[in-house]
Length: 346
Ligand code: ATP
Ligand code: MG
Image (cartoon, rainbow, N blue to C red; front, side, top):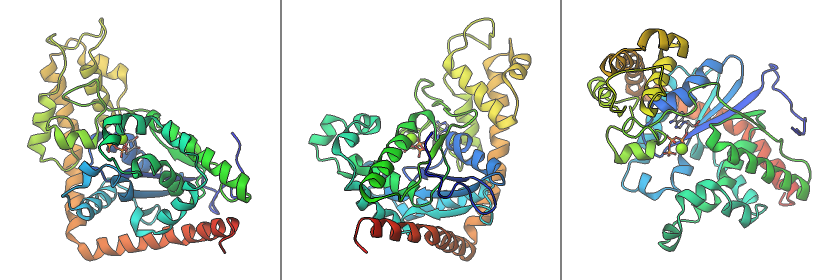
């Protein structure tokens, strides 16, 4: 893939990675397996820039209306820390604390053809014709420009995303190329990094639908929240949808709900499918669910203990929020100035 190659790696020789989670709801085990835990595992290998995407949450009004958004954002930030992200190793920040994201978005919006935005799958699925007629905000259409700004401000080498998000990194590359072609070389082209496994944990109530924050807000029993009371988490797992058989039968095709439980078990215990086969073939679903519940609740217990220590120390948390935003701004402000100069505004 083409790269501008101006800043191929950081001074420490590490590749720079940028990633974030939208503050559309409370974090669940899918976010942990597919994103946060991988960031924690990778943090000594990469130079991570990790953020809480609060500006993106505003594109989904039902996710934010009547909610204390800042409290939710700080909960997510504290959860990053509780899940093992080290704020010394990684730059951790809240998107709206770094105003350069919103500023660069305007420059990028102006070079992005409307037809590119209308083609985005997420707009086509979330911004249904009925919603558009009902007055859905233009942010839902334009947010790929904000996402491009989030990425391009930091010159990352890699952007880790699930399969469903690949199109967003591709449009970022297209927007970057278009800006560079119009105004001269300014932005680097990032590459996609697809997680090794656990990229798609499914809903416990409906194993054909991806576990997601926004669905979890409406359907109890859909997800396991990282801050769910332990008893509730266990109950949701014990009630997970499987099929009408009584137990795990590896000689036949496994139902999606069973595969999902096995994936969750393997991600939380670091075991393989072969090891699962060995352990669970012929076991009743109650046994499988009990094992999943033990593995998940043990980890949730650790995360929640750390979370409460972090969240209770407001002074320290505020210091980390400020420090992270300053570190991010150091890079973002330089890149924004370059973009303003390129566009002839400075
Ligand atoms: P929303 O309902 O608002 O889309 P979400 O739960 O899908 O929320 P995102 O903010 O879209 O979460 O994604 C945050 C990160 O978590 C991304 O890296 C995404 O790939 C990962 N992620 C989200 N859901 C899952 C899942 N079910 N399994 C694995 N990874 C997931
Ligand atoms: Mg999502």
